[in-house]
View 1 (cartoon, rainbow, N blue to C red):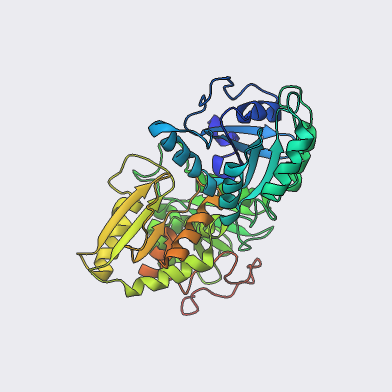
View 2: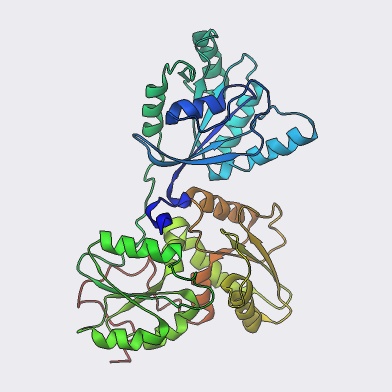
Length: 417
């Protein structure tokens, strides 16, 4: 399974490159990576849709470089390309604005867009081998309020300094918080409950499960794997209850009912709610679900795209739970991948998946968009815990109960021995 040995796209530092046509964006990407990974041409508009390229860059680690169409593109197709370019802004952890001419009006406008969405940015004066770069640098600093780096993608001038500047500009705490959210520590035994039904990919584990197992290994925990059918056998095989049980959300209640005293319980989706998103906002959003009625409208958003399955949690199980709880006439809309409505005001609740395929920056941008629209937003696992009546009893990563210690965790179900 070679895919498991590669850094998932959602874990990479996303660096977007913006600028006019023929400003040298693609050439700059090639210079940064030391490889001809982007198509370079003197014909304006060579880069059409955004191009994503996963790379390992010295000093930066695992990166996703986003090569975009020129934001000065014109015509009907050009307008569509600019729209596609604008859609990359929420995904960017860092942005480079490439400048190569005296007219900086568009660069100034795009710098404001990036700043409005909280994206860190660097200005770059490219093509120093053929223009008066110092003079242009002064104009860029005045127009954008950024002290630009002077480079030549053709000769390599300034590329090392640009890489150093990118490393210094990394968002504070990039890669944090830790996936386990403080719920497990070295020496803990952690039991993972992973259904192997039609939703589980044949012959392999889904990405959240793989990443959680790796995080447990890195933390020095003892990881035990089971299915709902083998849960009791796994518990019986242990000398004492596990410090933590992590379950798939779709069997949250079933596992909760079998959870022994002394064990804490959470779900993969809840871990990712804190790891990729805002666990506090998601809990508040789940509690706001009590305001739903049969006349309400709910948006369910998935990060990945896949063919619907009969047991699909987002398309089938959560809508069924919502309608059973709040009314059969409740309306549910579904979007997947990069699709996300501009008009969120028509919704009473947004339910997002764990976002394992998204970067934390991208998922948090959706949380902010929902909050700006005044629409509660929650996460699959958090909402399921609420609908199953166990949200107040399960462990919340990051903002929930204190990390458990081996043999010393307070009973999750004091009434049960």
